[in-house]
Amino acid sequence: MKDKRFPSELEALWKEDDMADGAKCKAMVMIMRTNGCCWVKHGGCTMCGYREASLMNVTPDDLQKQLDQALSRYKDEPFVKMYTSGSFLDDNEVPPAVREVYFDAFKGCKRLLFESRPEFITSDVVGSLPKNVTVALGLESSDPEVLRTSVHKGFTPEDIRRAGELLKDNGLGVRTYLLLKPPFMTEDMAIEDAVRSARFADPFSDEISINPLNVQRATYVERLWKRGEFRSPWIWSLIEVFRQLSGTVDARLMSSPSGGGAMRGVHNCGQCDQRALEAIERFCYSQNIDDLDVKCDCIPKWEAYRKSEAMLGSPSDLERDFENELVLRM
Ligand code: SF4
Ligand SMILES: [Zn+2]
Image 1: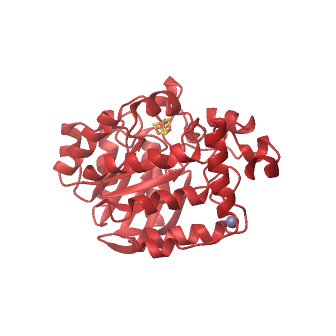
Image 2 (image 1 turned 90 degrees about the vertical axis):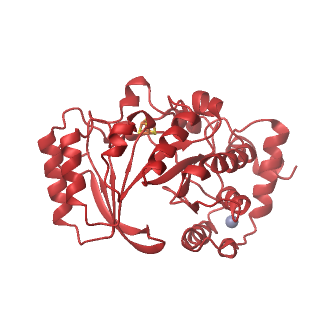
Image 3 (image 1 turned 180 degrees about the horizontal axis):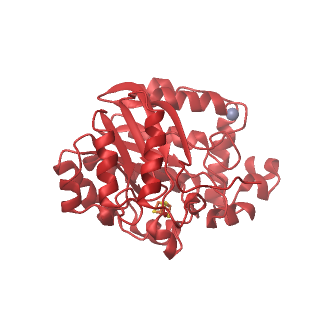
């Protein structure tokens, strides 16, 4: 049974590697408990399970206690990430006065990252942010139709462009998230969409993080997945996106897939998943395409899968829907 979740306690905290000032470094990651993403009231995004992490009654005092917990474990990591399962710049999640306290607590670190929807990124707010801030923007796709119908994002790519340019004009960092394989897309469509979206985001992004869709609980995507109407992307597709983009964008390309290698996350045949994910991790730091040179017998299967999808005109999970041999040999 799930433990009772207290609003004064962080959801989670851990340390991991990331980059600051062009060098690999340690980062402290805090998952905060807040009143949750404002967009959830409107149904939320089709792949987002963050409503599970949100509470209704988080007070400024609770947020202060969460900060105290984080500080008790802070070892001067140069990079700090503060995730709220929503928007750090939404006053309803983190009131401005509390934000100031958080900024002050981490004023000594090189990079301070948080996420925000673009509607909270106004000139006034941006002008008040400290210069070590990087804002993570969930663009997902540069195709307005994909955002509207497939992701149900509630804003347009132009909203993100405006926010990204405003942040850059103020000397702040931008990490843009793209969603690899929103629902209703085949692997080929997903690769093409991610590559096009990265080119759109490049002018206002320091980093572009490609996030392969991971099927989260109690989401619309989970319903599709359970009915066999969605397969999380292949790791080969993620590698293909990096291949096509490598050397053609200025932003650093990266990906930290959640659920990588599992059925709900980005996966290949099961034999090569770990190797392929490690190759991606190396590439994220080196940006050297040679690091992605992984091989496995399942590459022809991935290619056949893509051809079958194109032939059938369907993004259903062909591995589960049909006998593998029948469809994938076509
Ligand atoms: S993906 Fe982001 S904007 Fe969409 S519902 Fe989740 S937290 Fe809100
Ligand atoms: Zn394989």
